[in-house]
Amino acid sequence: MLYPAVRKEDDETRNRSAERIIEKGLNRVCQTQPKRPTILVCGYTGSGKSSLLRAVLGDIVPEDAIGAGKPQTMGFDFYENELIKVYDSRGLEAGETEEKFTEEVRQFIRDRRSDADLDNHIHLVWYTIQGPGARVTDCDKNLINNLFRKEDVIVVVTKCDIMQSKQMEGIKRELVESGVDESRIIFTSDEDSGSIGCRELMRLSYDMLPGAYKDAFMEAQRVDVEAKVEAIKAKRPKAAAIIAAAVATATATGAIPIPGPDAPILMAEQSAMISSFAVLYRLAREAVSKAYLPLLARTVGLLTVAAVTKSVPGVGSFVSATVAGSLTAAMGWYVQRDFERIAIAKATGSPMPDLRVDFQDFYNFMKNKEYEKLSKGIETDEQRKALK
Image (cartoon, rainbow, N blue to C red; front, top):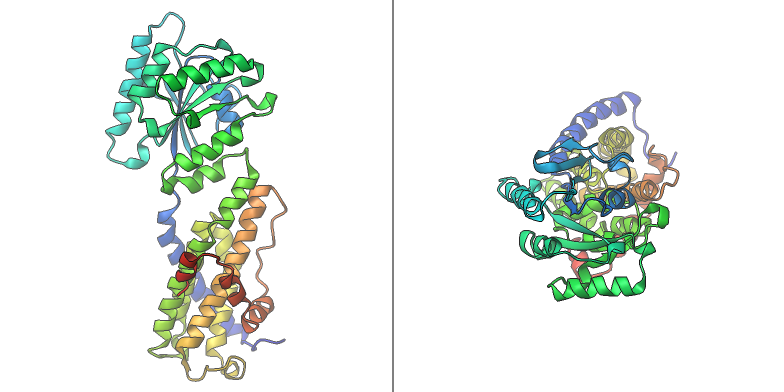
């Protein structure tokens, strides 16, 4: 065994202490879970709203979607899961005047905007037009240009697989002439026809959503696995900032200095760091707690048992600032690497990595300073600053 021996009873005591600390950390940071975006899908009856939602967001909308959502005032169905919220307008029914339909939508938007909680506002509008009809009505134009904020609207022309190119060009031209930005017109088909355009719709929606709502939307969408993986890897700078903050605190703590028996103070900071990763990568708190309790406990063991003085230079009766910072950095990058792998496996449907932590592997990771290689993998100057 290459790492210092730790008495079993000491390990068990630290496990109990780590369990309390990491649970406290999870409770604290889980209050900052990524926000769920709210999407309104609006358009005439039969314009393909439910099919579009199923193509992009999967089973949030059941197959028998009409009337299946939670009833809302003025004919809007509501669907939600842990990642996203969707309002689906019932559409303009036969025999109903466009004026009445427009007023219902106007009142619905007014009610959402008057809510004091911004999370309940409409963050994005998908306005659907049935392509084969090759017609943009005055009602369509009025809703798109006057009721919604233009910067929130994507016009989705559905069933493009059975449209002629002349029809597509005509609809696009009419929409642009009415004031719609051409870049926000997407032609799509449903799942049975290959989900044409759905990837472009997803990417445009992601770009248009406010920053706080992007992560949850990306995880909710199911049409672009590659984009999910890109988004997960793009979290590395945020992870680097979390590690940098933890290292700074740990270094300051070690500079006091702290007697070895008080090393659990460092464990609290390391626990908060791991908990923040759990939120960043949206991993189940129970799995995180069970898998990384032993790592936290053993890390404290490195700082508290007498044998450690011969294994980690600089550790004696006190935990030095350098050792406290290096140990926290090593733990941070080790856990970040694991969490990224797990998140990517979830996104791609690959077999999940084993969450059990091999402490010998971590000890070698720390001893060989592999964490420094990972931190240097942050490519931009701005990202490097997060580590200083």
